[in-house]
Image 1 (tube, rainbow, N blue to C red):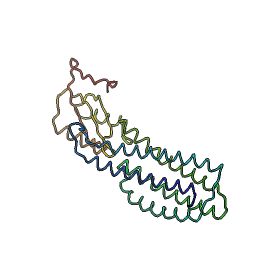
Image 2: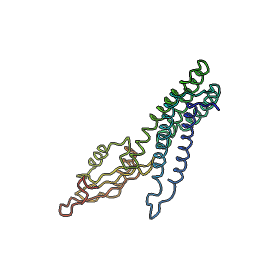
Image 3: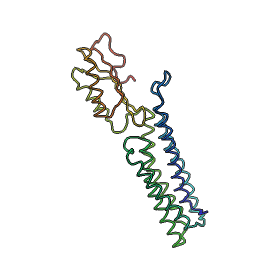
Length: 265
């Protein structure tokens, strides 16, 4: 055995990516399930849950590796540098090929977005582990191993924290990153015949689908289906919103909408 904590950290990072891909593939299957009377949106949100589980697992793993690296500074152990170099070099090739395969989808799906930077980081980390192995063989300095482990831990934390934040925000129905709520409200308010907009909500149904609901106050009356089709199309083209539900209301102070106040959810 190499007895290298740096190699163990690199292997743990790779294993977490495999687990993340399994989560992503499983979520992709679940999101294709048809809606039911009980689950009216189907299981689309499972893709968000998969991203959150992946990020949480990575944070736990990195914390354990970081703590072990600190202990290893106090009690250094012999490391087989040659084995470290060989195993890490194989990891570089595998990670690079895998990252190239996921490059195309890394901009549209949060799960793939989570897997892609991890694969890139894995390749970079493996390079660092190779260099650490060379340094140990050349100098015999065992502290290179825990030092490299701490660097690996830092890379994991940096690449994972943003994924964790984004997936947590989505699971809590926050407006997805890249969409400015004020811009959406302004667009709807500026539609012909719209006097005001209230009860506006934008959230993610999955890692790839965004939904919107809003009440449009139109004193002149319902504008017709053509208006709704056009607004839905423009919401998709401008903001990437695929599932828009718009409720048309008349300006009637005697029968005001109970959700008109922005304080009402």
